[in-house]
Length: 206
Ligand SMILES: Nc1nc2c(ncn2[C@@H]2O[C@H](COP(=O)(O)OP(=O)(O)OP(=O)(O)O)[C@@H](O)[C@H]2O)c(=O)[nH]1
Image (cartoon, rainbow, N blue to C red; front, side, top):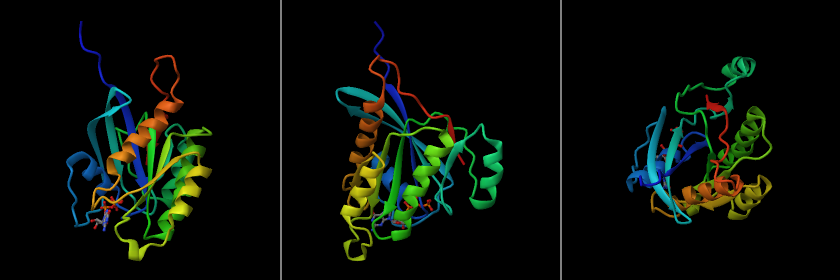
């Protein structure tokens, strides 16, 4: 008998510019931290992860955090034209069918924290859903002396969004793999108990 195929889950990482999205993803995929900063255009990576006894192939989409990264339904050309004035647009052929979202702010940046709710509301609104599998991540926790957002604020925000929450450091590799395990947990707890794959959004990252 042929071995069972791993389950495939697609995860998008979003957040403001320079909050450490790429660093988080690179630490997760390659176990390394790069100090220099190169703004991301967009990149997709795959890594297998074991969760509750099953192997998952996770496709992780690292997005660009220009003025703000947003998602919206690709079937809404009107929204596309509105959004073009306001946000940088990045098209992706990879980005259809996202199962879960990692929303990253830096604990050293109040404005990046405020952006989380805005991004979340855009996903909800544009995808026409009321709830999404989501992990809110407070990054750069090694920079404690520059902290602008308390753990309590992060936790409260995530609770309000029905999301998981964790603080990380890509630099010291604190809680990095945990982010993706939590995201799988959020995806799987919403999945139908019929053995069917969880529903993926019909959104495109723009
Ligand atoms: N001290 C510290 N610095 C970090 C950490 N994560 C990222 N950085 C630094 O923050 C800067 C931005 O990191 P990136 O990972 O490129 O940020 P990004 O969110 O992908 O940025 P965009 O591509 O513009 O959206 C880089 O100089 C990183 O080295 C962290 O955990 N701790």
